[in-house]
Image: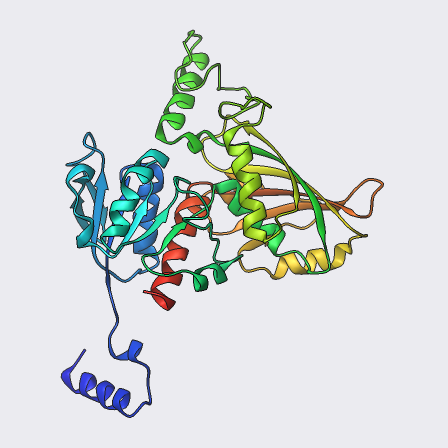
Length: 359
């Protein structure tokens, strides 16, 4: 920018004719913990794509990944060791390295004055509220620095985005969801394990399952993690709790079944909801079609994770239909990229809200 243009902007600002944001663009020191994982790499990519105001990007990972390099804006950035990282050197931290890492280091980051966005549900919602910018951005207004926030699980983000877009006249009483989750929900290890099993089977060789407790390739597993004494998995309980929190409906009845599907990337959700009264499908179609975070696929067609959602920044919804005999029942199908849309993008959008209004 030329010196004359800078002087002109400052004069206009002094006269109150333009805002301070036009005089000086703020930039922030940003850290990504777990930068070498699939979600961490997606975060780095989206920070570049969305031109996030980064002064310096600090890539951080555990000891075995420290020393590697990742590309950002044409430069190769070296990954630092989490054990020796100084949180006081940054303003905002993304935690994408698992819940145990968040639990160990989030307090340290907060004590250093960093805003924290956790992608691993490592903190209780009372300490780090769940946020989806298209659903409940007002949550941030009731918080104080240093901000501790959670980006919810990928299935919760897709599901809440769709339900929040429904017409206000629909009073939802119960939601039943079957979430068919890709193996990337288990990180790079899940992708590698499915690829290994598939290759062995296609070549007629036997194998011993490693990450999964039985054959994953060409199969469906009826649960994705260890069930409790009542048979409900950790993620199933998490989705139910997150959905109630995100929609502000603590009394909502939620039934969740998570299934591990032999798909590398992209989640698919079969959803049925029960309303208090008959549902107007025309209103539903119009509301879903108008929602900026959604892509509605008209009746007669349907979206798939692999063919539509992977690599995209919207949630796809289709097969929208009433119940067979109950006009107060609504059924639909959701497809979403669990790594990009369901993790990295939502976290970056939370960060954009923070820097625009609160930091």
